[in-house]
Image (cartoon, rainbow, N blue to C red; front, side):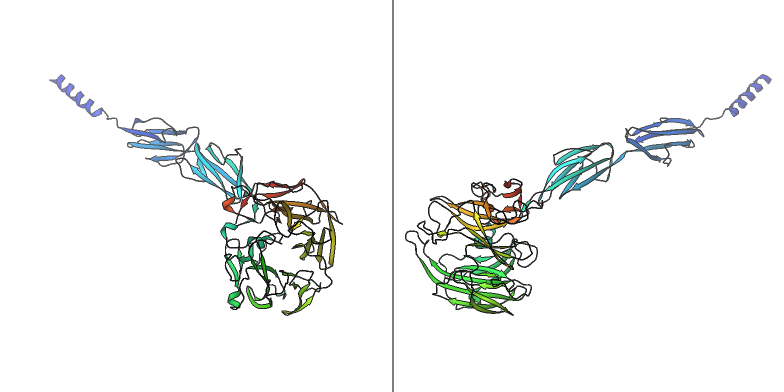
Length: 548
């Protein structure tokens, strides 16, 4: 019995001395799964155990922080196991900047595959960049950390990168699409001018001409001023001013100068009253001439005018003309109503008063004219190229065979012989001929003085006209013909009048035709171009864009 009691006591003692071991589970994770590793891995630990955690990022990742049962941004952390715990190591891709620079006139579209566009990209992000030129420019190249001529590139970001998208300007030719305004007389818009003009000083080129009416109309033509965007600036209908105005005033010669020195341009309108039933000199054709009707529109405010009828002489054989210039060199612009041979002009007395007189002596024999700054003193000069004309029979109308460029400036008149090529001009365009019709001037050889350009048409029976431009160099005492100085391709677009301007913005003056037809740009004799001023003359250039 004693032995039994002893065993029982010992059993009770052993049971009371055995201690239960408490364990807690530590669960470790990482996100993203390939962003790095966590040690130690998930396991169970006795209560109170301090477990050192280490988060180790993979190559292109950074440790961001712990989440779950702990919160810390240190990649090492000691956790005491006093309960079940779950911890997640947060990793993120390394972020790299993509710096974009744009040179020129364009933009870059930034597209990121599967991620949002941002200034810092996670490593490994693939970015698509699309360079798009704005109007008037073209994409040239990528440079920086990439070199490519392709406008679209893709790049995988694994380091900081810088790209530059380069755009270059396309030369803008300020020609006007005549398809936009088919009822306007485009010949008179271009003729006798050397470049674009801005009548109302708003920075947009303007058109001053008249609205063509149907051939059988007996109503007077309508003066129209609008800009190259189509905005109406001013119209003048003679019938509104003078309902009794006679019929058949179907064409208008127009000139404009500041006659009353108020800072606004005044207008001179010479209505030609001819009734054509064909071309004079052609079989079955006749022309009935019934005189001129001339008006001045004198400004009283911007685009507001007092109208003055100067003459209405239905049956007098006055020549059809109007030219505003300081003919008597007294500092005020006058109005030539006829050709210079007749010399019928209005002397400007000031304060909108004029005295009709005869201009003597005649400064030069009238021919093809233009107005521009010949001597580069900031004032407009009048230039005139006289050549002997031929009639319908191919006979000269005068015994004067000189070819003379005359320049009238505020200092007087100068005369220069034009040599090296006979310039033919015909009164009527019949048969197989070349007839000079327009002149322009430009410093084509960049020597500081103005050279002469003569525009001619080539007529052949049953064929469309083609055009040539001849260049005569100013030698100081004369103008000498330079064959081939202006490149000619008669299959391209052509006109009588060329205009000048620095199309490519390189500091010298180029040449271009002032009008084109958009509907004919792909047709023979319709393809547009401009002439680039080079060391070897004016060369055809087909790199351009047309704004208007």
